Image 1 (cartoon, rainbow, N blue to C red):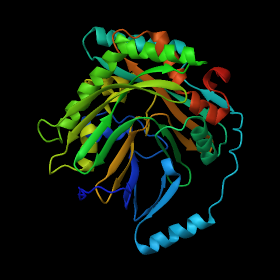
Image 2: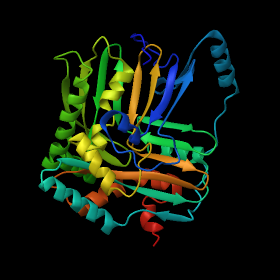
Image 3: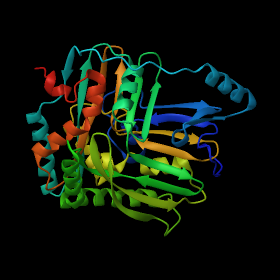
Image 4: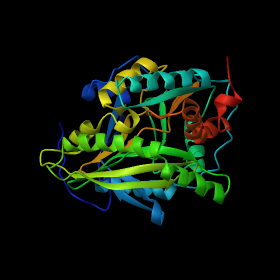
Length: 374
């Protein structure tokens, strides 16, 4: 275990590691079944001695690292120029996923397990495969233009794999000895006009089903953070609604003070795999996901993170995330199933969540319907 010193800084990344841990790597932590392999490795970390850090509120750059690194950063900024608008996506050769009937059957299977007392909530997902050549960075730029989420990331893993993530969900933030997690549970689409949009947000805010779904996961996250927290310091800060480009979400902050022997790595291990995308109880839900879903998740529902030498860290939940290979792109969409879930509504929720990725990759918000394949 590499320990990091605890310090606060106005530059989040002064040097350290950046990378991801795939969902299946949870087998190391919570006995999550591994399943078959995917194009991307189970985990990938890289060491950086400095960084060019963009501060979005002021549209300014901060250069970190030793003097040589800073000079290279300055030269890079001097050479930089505006990019042209991203190109229109190519028409896919084929788009495939489980169909609505099959997905709803899986939801009913989960509902049966919940009725039997086997588990309380299972986050069920389906993979969408878009076949045909793509430029991954162009696709990522289109995605960011359509729906700029708070925890986006793009990076290549070797020559033939790239990860495009547009996550709105914070798994972990560490500043000094303070750790925070913000699980998301509850979704409604955005309305076509202000009145419809407010009505959908109110529906989410008042839904007993969505409140119960989030409460279960908040309790799970409180328990996870309790493994690395000073006794009595775990706190919750109340349910909140956030409007994103294509959906409304409900979330809830959970905070704690880390023990002296805990750091970003032990906190990540305690929280992993993210409870909001597994279910409750976590291990049982993970086992059911492995049995029911149509393939491995890979990085989807894992975590993308940086850990600075100063101890500052951020980790997102890898949702709204696609994996590119030269001839195809794979992404997943899903949602939490609880006792009063409606199978058709759950299918519709997966469509709402995938619209930005679908449009960025194919030009259509629901490519699985437009390019449906037998």
